[in-house]
Length: 297
Image 1 (tube, helix red, strand yellow):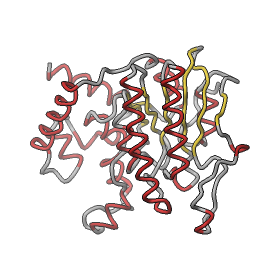
Image 2 (tube, rainbow, N blue to C red):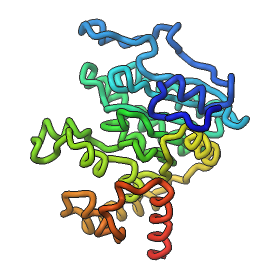
Image 3 (cartoon, rainbow, N blue to C red):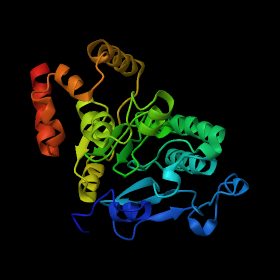
Image 4 (cartoon, rainbow, N blue to C red):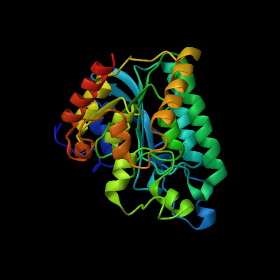
């Protein structure tokens, strides 16, 4: 395996086959099955034979896993009826075969506008399936490093998982930059301002805010290493843990709710020289987070 492969530059199948042990991936409902969206052709929109998501089973350092990877090059990885059903199906299969983990390589702009209602229903079904898998003690690990980010319903799904791993180039948010701009105007959020977009939704910001558990370089081997480390590492989901997270979010609103810029948020969180964060590498960010944790303990 090339230790310097860019995760962002690979397509969904390349990510899966490079992440898993060699020749171990067995695809379910691949292109040959031609399981396509029932809606796109009716609208005169091109469709894909795998509906933009690769699912199957394989081995990760000899351990059995189930895996799903969204194809950002097809409709931005948007979730439609079939796309969502494939995600639900692989999660439900986990309850039967009990793998060491379910890995989701998320890259999506959210629900497909062409299949709005079906996509929204699919997102809710995927969220329920994720929580069912977690309740069974099987870890669900989100790996986010694609060029299209993880937005909309997929952003919500990601935060339902046990672990979220992002590259420093990745992005995650409920609403994408273009959606915010179109609904509230460029004065509210300029989607063409790349620095602003990454400060607000990027992996570094999510890591500093605690929305992302692990931050890595744009390196497939780094994603693989963390995926191996997280095998079997499920987090117990209890009422108490949900109450603690709700309190954390409440405290966050009180502390930084009035801020309108990420740099100001980082300053309020106690980050020294917050204007230098954008230029820091992953190791520097990890050291920064460790020092913050030590200071707060």
